[in-house]
Amino acid sequence: MKLLLIEDEPSVISLIQRSLSASGHEITVAMDGQSGLQMALQHEFDLILLDLMIPVINGMEVCRRIRSTDLSVPILMLTALGTTENIVSGLDAGADDYMTKPFKLAELEARIRTLTRRGKELEKDKNVDLLRIGDLVLDKITKTVTRDSQPIEMTATEFRLLEFLLSNQNKVLNRMEILENVWDINFNLGTNVVDVYINYLRKKIDKNHRSKLIHTVFGMGYVMRQTYEDPK
Image (cartoon, rainbow, N blue to C red; front, side, top):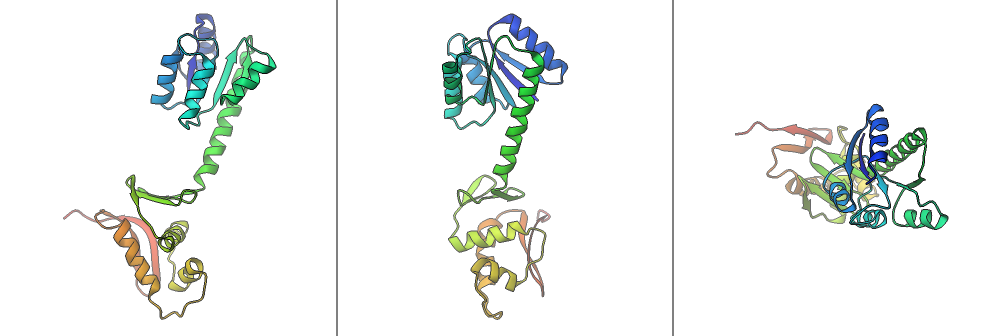
């Protein structure tokens, strides 16, 4: 794992580096709050170890600024300030856990494992709300759709249809299945509403893209899968 250690005591830095590097972690060190904050915002880390009493910007403020950007990286505070008030303040600032110095290295590693595991579980839960295929992403929470990071405007019906197709990608869906799940009523099979809305979606998400996502399976229905056309 990639860890950021924001600490200004050389002896503590050396101790943590030796121990965590031996466990296979990659450690990046910042010796003041300003450089630590810049590293946290400009690079991706699995966890941040943050001392409170550091130069330039104190650890509490560093934590607050990281959280103000909605960065969800786990933060473990390491400090000699171990009063209840300090711990509460640290957690209120956005820290996920708090260890007082001196600490045992075995406990530190256990806390790191717990926090990173929890972070992965939260990220997994978060991703349940995202449906994607290739560079197309549908966010069920924000009700937004992007392709190649570009937003695509959708009507409510188009969004429901795309969500159903994405939830069943690589599965051929007949018109009746689509009607019952997207419109929630039994249409006459002879209606062409499905075909009309499939055409709307194609114009919005497939037009001008080499990778075509919505495909017709003649005599059966439609399927969402990723294929590539040969360049002309």
